[in-house]
Image: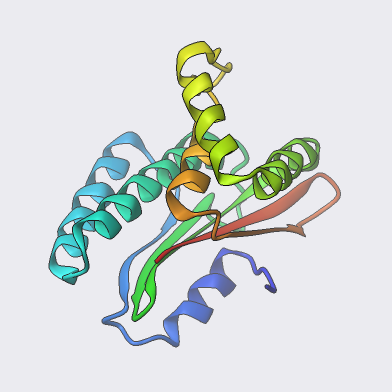
Length: 181
């Protein structure tokens, strides 16, 4: 997948039928905005007419993605690029959620390593690691217990794509896409 900055991501998705775009936002994610976006998404998912388990998985993944943007997307706000982008779309074969935000290069290697590890883990081990992290997880300096990507991998069946695109010498644009079938 060819990853683009937030403005280019919006251009790419604007080619789709307006009915397929369920939620789109570009900018800084605040706590109040997070609540509003989740409320809108919940209503749109309900009206979508897909099966309840699919709606529930998509909503839970959206929560994790928005929380990641809220916690990590606001760390490195670029003047020329809003801090985060999220788009949720419906198609015949499922619901896609795409996010993007800038990150420091030193954080990218750790994130890439974690995502590669999740891709390689068998489904059963993801489930076990999630349970273990729930019980024994230590909270990070930003308040998370490391459950976000584990939960996304668990609920999506690891239908995840990601990429890091250079912005400048110190920052990358991280794009993350996940699909719920």
